Length: 500
Ligand code: SIN
Image (tube, rainbow, N blue to C red; front, side, top):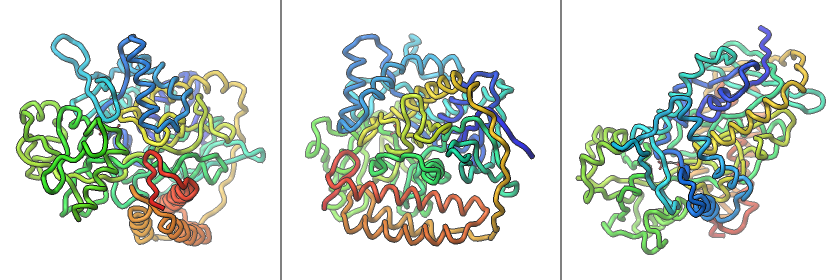
């Protein structure tokens, strides 16, 4: 089948879907989802979307400065300014697309606070189901846009390049059966996060760094991969064998929950004047230290001083999940431990979402816009998806007619084996947790990088036309980039903590 479109978008989380909707309807768009559209990381986002809705210049400035401070000033100030300046338009656009944010009885937005924010400026939806409502709402809009064709259960394998190294689409595998090229004038990577690189993550396990792997193989610049953000409070459950961890939103601390160690003592005052509302890197590192000092593997979130019925209304997803585990919010301590949550680095893009490779864009967590610096400010990621998704779409709408239609290509044949690569995935997760986690050493990182180079060479020698093979390749390449960048940065800053 000859598939040819104006725009190919790889990934159907919030960034991919929003960008698809912002492309001028006169252009054809192919939007591909590795699983179904209801299966993305964006769906799992609990906290909300940060946006300063007041026109008070002090408040606007403070979102800018809070973002820089959380990122240890390694952010690109121009990108942060762009993000903050466009936040109100981003919210207005989401509302115009039917997304509803929680309001009080006077129809004013209910705003919450999370770590690193000086003010309450986080809008939420369905209490603690912001990502679910925003992504689901936008996904429903796709049916109203006949120019967008959605291909589910389709994995992009590799970007296709012409002789001048311009991206002309991607090779894909549809429902593990049809191996085809999709030709496009421009291609947008929106594949989300990298959680499966680690043994424990808050991400959906389909987050295997696909966009970063593909972009790397196509020669794109990849930046700041050492800055992997660990969420301080994933639910700790000793009996759990699954690698995905249930997130306990930082907004819970914003509403008054605090952290105590295994000795039932509060500890954040030792680490930061903002206590539980310190930026996420500081809180995760503090918890790591407490667990180390008390020879244990978790701490607790304490909500016993808060009203259970308020908690049930404000955090229904968390409340119900915990109840299913026989933990009652407002009555019981909640065991928590940090785990992988977000990659602050990624495929380097400019303010229009353009990568260093011609006709290739990246949006959302896959992209490195420079907004997050060394540690992302809470709830800035959904905002980044919308602001930079819109910017990329604007740029594409302005330039698409000057880009020639690529000629169809014939894909090289590939062998097909039933290997599942599970041992390889486990090995990567074990090494990354141990040596590229919250605390890192030169020896551990070097050992891991060398191990990954061995795996990568073996994979390159034995290509295999399956989703599992390409996911394994993307995991190895993403993990390699993290360790390589972490070795290069010898000092400690933000989420990157080196003890030697
Ligand atoms: C959370 O709700 O704690 C996560 C939100 C985010 O990652 O910004």
